[in-house]
Length: 97
Image 1 (cartoon, helix red, strand yellow):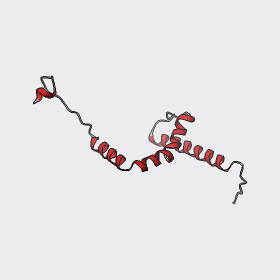
Image 2 (cartoon, one colour):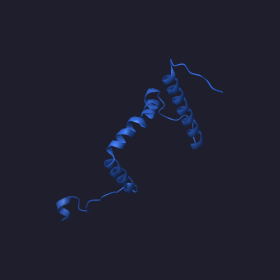
Image 3 (tube, rainbow, N blue to C red):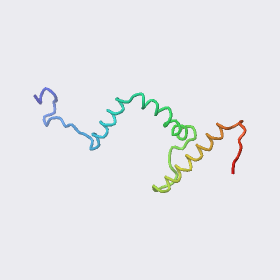
Image 4 (cartoon, rainbow, N blue to C red):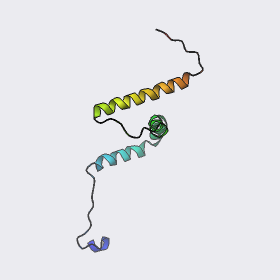
């Protein structure tokens, strides 16, 4: 039957990634929860898209996991502060200390 499926005299090789089981599981869960993933795309992915495309933070400037975490934390802090400012802009804010 080999001649029906390939013209290669050595046969055909099927390569499967070592993490293919995980990818198959993610694909299955995504197919089962389409509405949940749509909601996630509109709530969770928006800040990352804004930071990446609008603000232009496509690459990290630092090297090393600790420094990258610090840089990402500062970027998220800036996003959250800017968002809070835009939400409360024009509203009277009372500071409680």
